[in-house]
Image (cartoon, rainbow, N blue to C red; front, top):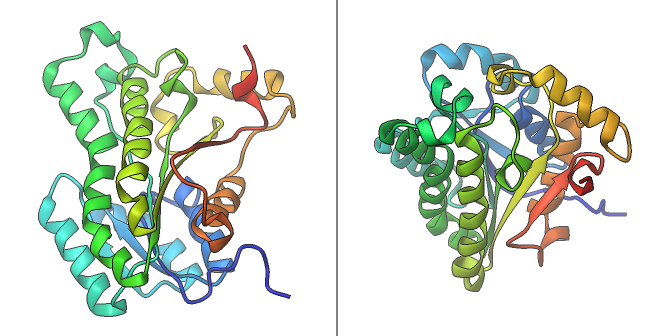
Length: 259
Protein backbone atom coordinates (compact mmCIF):
# COMPACT_ATOMS: atom_id res chain seq x y z
CA UNK A 1 0.00 0.00 0.00
CA UNK A 2 1.39 3.39 -1.03
CA UNK A 3 1.73 5.78 1.93
CA UNK A 4 -0.33 8.99 1.85
CA UNK A 5 2.81 11.13 1.90
CA UNK A 6 4.97 9.73 -0.89
CA UNK A 7 7.82 11.81 -2.32
CA UNK A 8 9.54 9.04 -4.27
CA UNK A 9 11.06 10.44 -7.46
CA UNK A 10 10.68 14.05 -6.32
CA UNK A 11 13.50 16.56 -5.96
CA UNK A 12 13.23 19.23 -3.29
CA UNK A 13 15.23 22.31 -2.30
CA UNK A 14 15.33 23.13 1.40
CA UNK A 15 16.80 26.40 2.65
CA UNK A 16 17.34 27.75 6.14
CA UNK A 17 18.97 24.88 8.02
CA UNK A 18 21.12 26.42 10.74
CA UNK A 19 21.74 23.33 12.89
CA UNK A 20 20.10 20.06 13.95
CA UNK A 21 17.36 21.88 15.89
CA UNK A 22 16.19 24.02 12.95
CA UNK A 23 12.67 23.89 11.60
CA UNK A 24 14.17 23.07 8.21
CA UNK A 25 15.95 20.07 9.69
CA UNK A 26 12.61 18.57 10.69
CA UNK A 27 11.29 19.28 7.20
CA UNK A 28 14.34 17.69 5.57
CA UNK A 29 14.00 14.58 7.72
CA UNK A 30 10.32 14.15 6.87
CA UNK A 31 10.97 14.60 3.15
CA UNK A 32 13.84 12.11 3.11
CA UNK A 33 11.71 9.61 5.04
CA UNK A 34 9.03 10.03 2.35
CA UNK A 35 11.56 9.25 -0.39
CA UNK A 36 12.56 12.68 -1.72
CA UNK A 37 15.97 13.54 -3.14
CA UNK A 38 17.09 16.76 -1.45
CA UNK A 39 19.19 19.79 -2.22
CA UNK A 40 20.30 21.76 0.84
CA UNK A 41 21.80 25.25 1.04
CA UNK A 42 24.01 27.17 3.44
CA UNK A 43 24.50 30.93 3.83
CA UNK A 44 28.31 31.04 4.06
CA UNK A 45 31.30 28.84 4.87
CA UNK A 46 31.02 29.56 8.60
CA UNK A 47 27.42 28.35 8.72
CA UNK A 48 28.16 25.29 6.59
CA UNK A 49 30.06 23.70 9.46
CA UNK A 50 26.90 23.74 11.58
CA UNK A 51 24.79 21.91 8.99
CA UNK A 52 27.33 19.20 8.17
CA UNK A 53 25.89 16.76 10.77
CA UNK A 54 22.48 17.06 9.09
CA UNK A 55 23.97 16.67 5.61
CA UNK A 56 25.83 13.50 6.58
CA UNK A 57 23.01 11.97 8.61
CA UNK A 58 20.50 12.40 5.77
CA UNK A 59 22.99 11.42 3.07
CA UNK A 60 22.48 14.60 1.03
CA UNK A 61 24.98 14.94 -1.81
CA UNK A 62 23.89 18.25 -3.34
CA UNK A 63 24.71 21.14 -0.99
CA UNK A 64 25.14 24.66 -2.36
CA UNK A 65 25.92 28.17 -1.20
CA UNK A 66 22.81 30.36 -1.26
CA UNK A 67 22.86 33.85 0.28
CA UNK A 68 19.71 35.73 -0.73
CA UNK A 69 21.54 39.05 -0.42
CA UNK A 70 23.85 37.87 -3.23
CA UNK A 71 21.75 37.23 -6.37
CA UNK A 72 24.52 35.36 -8.11
CA UNK A 73 24.34 32.58 -5.51
CA UNK A 74 20.64 32.07 -6.25
CA UNK A 75 21.40 31.82 -9.96
CA UNK A 76 24.26 29.40 -9.33
CA UNK A 77 22.18 27.17 -7.06
CA UNK A 78 19.33 26.77 -9.53
CA UNK A 79 21.75 26.23 -12.40
CA UNK A 80 23.35 23.45 -10.38
CA UNK A 81 19.96 21.88 -9.64
CA UNK A 82 19.09 21.99 -13.33
CA UNK A 83 22.40 20.37 -14.26
CA UNK A 84 22.09 17.66 -11.61
CA UNK A 85 18.38 16.80 -11.89
CA UNK A 86 16.84 18.68 -14.81
CA UNK A 87 13.82 19.61 -12.69
CA UNK A 88 12.59 20.64 -9.25
CA UNK A 89 9.41 19.43 -7.55
CA UNK A 90 9.31 21.53 -4.39
CA UNK A 91 11.17 24.27 -2.55
CA UNK A 92 11.07 25.26 1.12
CA UNK A 93 11.74 28.86 2.14
CA UNK A 94 12.73 29.12 5.81
CA UNK A 95 14.71 32.28 6.38
CA UNK A 96 14.21 35.61 8.11
CA UNK A 97 16.36 38.40 9.48
CA UNK A 98 15.98 41.74 11.20
CA UNK A 99 18.48 43.89 13.03
CA UNK A 100 18.29 43.33 16.79
CA UNK A 101 17.19 46.91 17.53
CA UNK A 102 14.42 46.68 14.94
CA UNK A 103 13.26 43.30 16.24
CA UNK A 104 13.10 44.39 19.89
CA UNK A 105 12.23 48.03 19.40
CA UNK A 106 9.02 49.80 18.50
CA UNK A 107 7.82 49.47 14.93
CA UNK A 108 7.50 53.27 14.74
CA UNK A 109 11.22 53.55 15.50
CA UNK A 110 12.32 51.18 12.72
CA UNK A 111 14.85 52.79 10.40
CA UNK A 112 14.20 52.83 6.67
CA UNK A 113 17.34 50.79 6.08
CA UNK A 114 16.44 48.29 8.79
CA UNK A 115 12.90 47.91 7.46
CA UNK A 116 14.16 47.39 3.91
CA UNK A 117 16.70 44.78 5.02
CA UNK A 118 14.16 42.83 7.08
CA UNK A 119 11.64 42.82 4.23
CA UNK A 120 14.27 41.87 1.66
CA UNK A 121 15.63 38.86 3.53
CA UNK A 122 12.43 37.72 5.23
CA UNK A 123 9.84 38.35 2.53
CA UNK A 124 11.08 39.30 -0.91
CA UNK A 125 13.57 36.44 -0.84
CA UNK A 126 10.56 34.10 -1.10
CA UNK A 127 9.45 35.92 -4.23
CA UNK A 128 12.94 35.62 -5.70
CA UNK A 129 13.09 31.94 -4.82
CA UNK A 130 9.76 31.37 -6.57
CA UNK A 131 10.94 33.20 -9.66
CA UNK A 132 14.11 31.13 -9.87
CA UNK A 133 12.26 27.87 -9.24
CA UNK A 134 9.48 28.47 -11.78
CA UNK A 135 11.31 27.15 -14.89
CA UNK A 136 12.43 23.99 -13.04
CA UNK A 137 8.91 23.42 -11.70
CA UNK A 138 7.61 23.67 -15.26
CA UNK A 139 10.06 20.94 -16.30
CA UNK A 140 8.57 18.76 -13.56
CA UNK A 141 5.02 19.43 -14.71
CA UNK A 142 4.26 21.53 -11.62
CA UNK A 143 5.67 22.20 -8.20
CA UNK A 144 5.10 23.29 -4.63
CA UNK A 145 6.50 26.22 -2.65
CA UNK A 146 6.25 26.43 1.14
CA UNK A 147 7.39 29.25 3.40
CA UNK A 148 7.49 29.51 7.19
CA UNK A 149 5.49 32.23 8.91
CA UNK A 150 4.26 32.97 12.46
CA UNK A 151 1.18 34.20 14.31
CA UNK A 152 2.87 37.59 14.77
CA UNK A 153 1.69 38.31 11.22
CA UNK A 154 -1.87 38.90 12.42
CA UNK A 155 -1.61 39.42 16.18
CA UNK A 156 0.77 41.56 18.20
CA UNK A 157 3.52 39.47 19.77
CA UNK A 158 5.69 41.32 22.28
CA UNK A 159 9.29 41.81 21.14
CA UNK A 160 8.53 40.59 17.61
CA UNK A 161 8.63 44.11 16.20
CA UNK A 162 9.19 44.60 12.51
CA UNK A 163 9.21 40.86 11.88
CA UNK A 164 5.44 40.84 12.37
CA UNK A 165 5.13 43.18 9.40
CA UNK A 166 7.46 40.99 7.35
CA UNK A 167 5.42 37.87 8.09
CA UNK A 168 2.17 39.66 7.19
CA UNK A 169 3.69 40.61 3.83
CA UNK A 170 5.02 37.07 3.41
CA UNK A 171 1.53 35.63 3.83
CA UNK A 172 0.14 38.14 1.31
CA UNK A 173 2.88 37.12 -1.13
CA UNK A 174 1.86 33.49 -0.61
CA UNK A 175 -1.71 34.26 -1.69
CA UNK A 176 -0.76 36.38 -4.70
CA UNK A 177 1.82 33.92 -5.98
CA UNK A 178 -0.64 31.05 -5.54
CA UNK A 179 -3.00 32.96 -7.82
CA UNK A 180 -0.32 33.83 -10.38
CA UNK A 181 1.35 30.40 -10.56
CA UNK A 182 -1.68 28.15 -10.19
CA UNK A 183 -2.24 27.90 -13.93
CA UNK A 184 1.19 26.25 -14.17
CA UNK A 185 0.25 23.69 -11.53
CA UNK A 186 2.53 25.41 -9.02
CA UNK A 187 1.17 25.57 -5.49
CA UNK A 188 2.22 28.10 -2.84
CA UNK A 189 1.54 27.68 0.87
CA UNK A 190 2.71 28.98 4.25
CA UNK A 191 3.16 26.93 7.41
CA UNK A 192 2.70 28.75 10.72
CA UNK A 193 4.26 26.84 13.63
CA UNK A 194 3.75 27.59 17.28
CA UNK A 195 6.75 28.83 19.26
CA UNK A 196 9.72 26.49 19.53
CA UNK A 197 13.31 27.14 20.52
CA UNK A 198 15.52 27.57 17.47
CA UNK A 199 18.61 29.68 16.91
CA UNK A 200 16.44 32.42 15.39
CA UNK A 201 13.95 32.31 18.27
CA UNK A 202 16.74 32.62 20.83
CA UNK A 203 17.21 36.21 19.67
CA UNK A 204 13.68 37.22 20.71
CA UNK A 205 13.49 38.67 24.22
CA UNK A 206 11.15 36.83 26.57
CA UNK A 207 10.79 33.82 24.28
CA UNK A 208 10.83 31.33 27.17
CA UNK A 209 7.74 33.04 28.56
CA UNK A 210 6.09 32.89 25.15
CA UNK A 211 6.61 29.12 24.99
CA UNK A 212 5.28 28.66 28.50
CA UNK A 213 2.18 30.68 27.62
CA UNK A 214 1.65 28.58 24.50
CA UNK A 215 1.66 25.37 26.51
CA UNK A 216 -0.73 26.85 29.06
CA UNK A 217 -3.22 28.39 26.63
CA UNK A 218 -3.20 26.05 23.62
CA UNK A 219 -6.13 23.62 23.56
CA UNK A 220 -3.75 20.66 23.33
CA UNK A 221 -1.30 22.10 25.95
CA UNK A 222 1.75 21.12 23.94
CA UNK A 223 4.67 22.69 22.13
CA UNK A 224 5.27 21.99 18.47
CA UNK A 225 8.45 20.18 17.35
CA UNK A 226 10.46 20.34 14.12
CA UNK A 227 9.13 16.85 13.39
CA UNK A 228 5.54 18.11 13.60
CA UNK A 229 6.33 20.91 11.18
CA UNK A 230 8.14 18.50 8.89
CA UNK A 231 5.17 16.15 8.75
CA UNK A 232 2.78 18.92 7.68
CA UNK A 233 5.22 20.37 5.16
CA UNK A 234 5.94 16.98 3.57
CA UNK A 235 2.19 16.47 3.18
CA UNK A 236 1.76 19.88 1.52
CA UNK A 237 4.50 19.28 -1.06
CA UNK A 238 3.33 15.74 -1.82
CA UNK A 239 0.67 14.75 -4.31
CA UNK A 240 -1.69 14.27 -1.36
CA UNK A 241 -1.79 18.06 -1.12
CA UNK A 242 -2.19 18.58 -4.86
CA UNK A 243 -5.20 20.92 -4.58
CA UNK A 244 -4.06 22.85 -1.51
CA UNK A 245 -2.69 26.29 -2.33
CA UNK A 246 -2.71 29.87 -1.11
CA UNK A 247 -3.23 29.00 2.55
CA UNK A 248 -1.62 29.62 5.91
CA UNK A 249 -1.59 26.28 7.74
CA UNK A 250 -1.14 26.28 11.51
CA UNK A 251 0.68 23.58 13.44
CA UNK A 252 0.55 24.93 16.99
CA UNK A 253 -1.66 22.65 19.11
CA UNK A 254 -4.51 25.05 18.42
CA UNK A 255 -2.91 28.12 20.01
CA UNK A 256 -3.96 30.36 17.11
CA UNK A 257 -7.68 29.97 17.88
CA UNK A 258 -7.38 31.43 21.36
CA UNK A 259 -8.41 35.02 22.02
